[in-house]
Image (cartoon, rainbow, N blue to C red; front, side, top):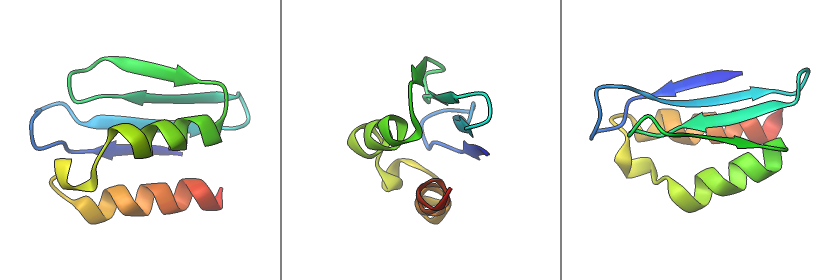
Length: 72
């Protein structure tokens, strides 16, 4: 799964990528820095600690992305 989320402070969207088949879990921040993770759970925990729904133009799409990741 891949999610592009428009952050209010950046023209470049944030990215959440979860690919269990290739064990690839990563995020791209509003400042275009990225971070890789060893598991989906580790990535979701990091997202919850570092991103806030109100940072995004559509907070509901952020919440939906986390729900989808948890259901994966």
